[in-house]
Image (cartoon, rainbow, N blue to C red):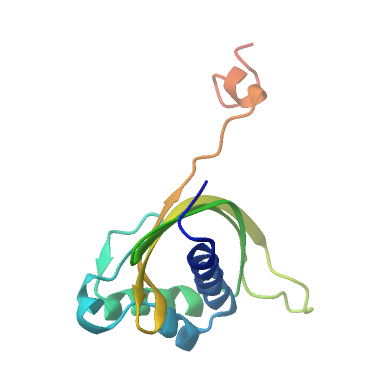
Length: 161
């Protein structure tokens, strides 16, 4: 779905991607540039999967600093991206296919990688400096059970035998 003028939608898509690029690369200064500031700074919010809502630009930035400091590897593959623009507000919904990992092994090989799926809603506000992220909400998607898991009523591989 695409709503709004093409130029504005494309600008929102670029800043949305820049947001994920900043988190992926652990670039807190870039994230600071993307987050809304000024008189609405106290209304900036984030909901990370499993976290309570955090309000205020400073609290939001600290939460990302903690995530970046404690995650050795993170990569986002965005799918189902939809953008709607109305005046000075924009809404982006997408699926975050996330690959993250722990520290490298002593031999230099990659640490254990874990995949996850989060659906996200990002709200942007148009300012004199361009589009700025006002709110990010990420909600985990529960993995669907496979047919074999559904048949295994005892959880021990016996499937009710």
